[in-house]
Image (tube, rainbow, N blue to C red; front, top):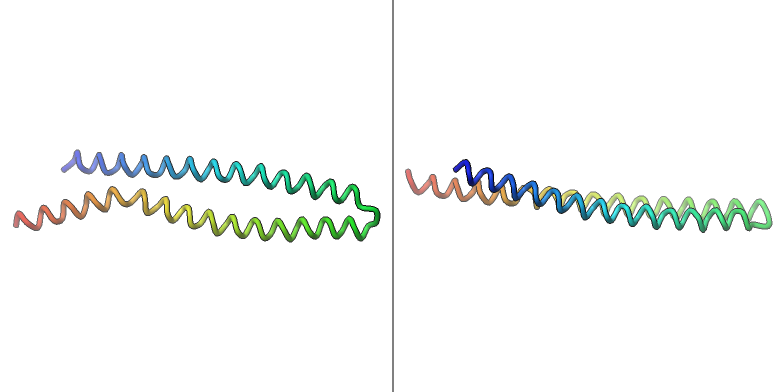
Length: 106
């Protein structure tokens, strides 16, 4: 039974590592994309001909940022829940198999 537990924990750790890597890569891409948004916003502010146009460019960037940040938070939450489920799956499978086996021996 201990080898089954070890295998389940190893599979769980593998699942967590894969999820963490995928999430990290996606967040890295998002950070690069946001840098591009900020660069375009800074250019729009510096190219504005009036203070009102500069304020409009800043406001536009800020509203876009809030929208993107909210979407990313929702996406990240979903990814973390999926990662949790994938990490627990091998442990759950092993535990339920052990429970079935132990029920048959009684």
